[in-house]
Amino acid sequence: MKFSHRFSSLLLASVCMMSTPPLLAQGVEPQATSANNATPSVDEIVHRTNHVSYFQGKDGRAQVQMVITDDQGRSRQRSFTILRRDRSDSEAVTDHAYLGEQQLYVYFNRPADVNKMVFMVHKKRQADDDRWLYLPALDLVKRIAASDKRTSFVGSDYFYEDVSGRSVEEDTHELLRTTDNYYVLRHTPKDPDSVEFAYYDMYVHKQSFIPVQVEFFDKNNSKYRVSRALKVDDIDGYPTVTEASMENLNTGSKTLMRYSQVRYNIGLPDDVFTERYLRTPPRQYLR
Image 1: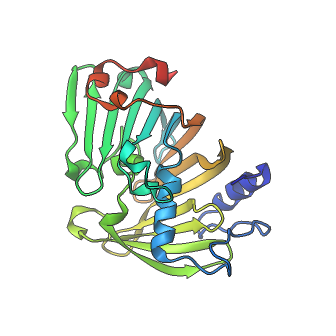
Image 2: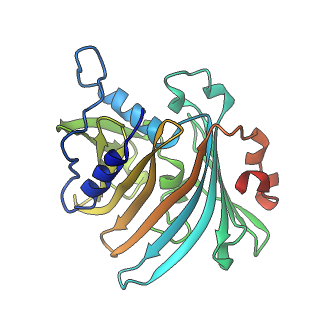
C-alpha cells in the first residue's frame, strides 16, 4: 500500500482539530474488502488494526523522541530506540501474523537519568506478557507485574501496555457506526476490575486500518485519555505512524512521540531479546 505526501498531510490536518472525532478531507478512497466493498466483520477490523499497529513486517527498528509536557507547559524529553521481532512460530500464520507472539526491546539514550535503561517485553497469546526493566544506576533487573502494565511508562502519559500493545483477547468489540472514512469501534474489557477504564472508542481509518484516535472513558462515563496518530508515512511499503500523542484530560499533561529512522525486516536475532542483553545492549542494532 502506498501513501502520498498529500495523504499524510490530510491525516495530520484532520487529527489536529480535536475536540470532535477526526475527519479526513475528501478524496481518500476506502480500501475495498471484498468484491462488493462490503463492510468487513468486527473481528477482521480489530485484527487488521492490531496488525497495522504492532505487527507489520517480521521485525523492525525505530528511533523515538518523546516530549512530556505538563499542565504548566514545562517539558521533559526522552530519547530511545525500539527493536521489535515477531516470534518465528507466527511467521507461518500468513495473513494473521498479528496472532503471533512478539518481543520488544527499548533502549534509552537520554537524558542522563535514564541513559542505558532497558525495557523488554515478551508478548504472549494465552498468558500475561513478561516485562522487564533494567535500572543501570542500581544494576537491577526488575520484573514488571501484570498488574502494573497500566501504569506510567517512564513518567509519560503512555502506559507500559500502550507501548507493547493490548491483547485483542482482553476485550469485547463492537462496531458502533461507520462514516465515509472511519470504522468507529467500542472495546470493553472482559475483566473490568483489572483496568482503570470502562471502555474505549477507536476511530479506524478505512483505507489504512490505522487507529487515528482512541478515547478512553472511566467508570463515570467521562472521557479522560485520548491517543492520536498525528502523522503517517509510507515506509518500506507499510503505512507507519511517525508522530503520535497521548493526552491526559484529567491532569492536562500531554506526551508527544516522534519516530525516525524506521526500518522493517532487518533480521533481528532471537537472542537480542534475552536477559543477557539487558545489561549488555546489542549496539550494532541500536545505531
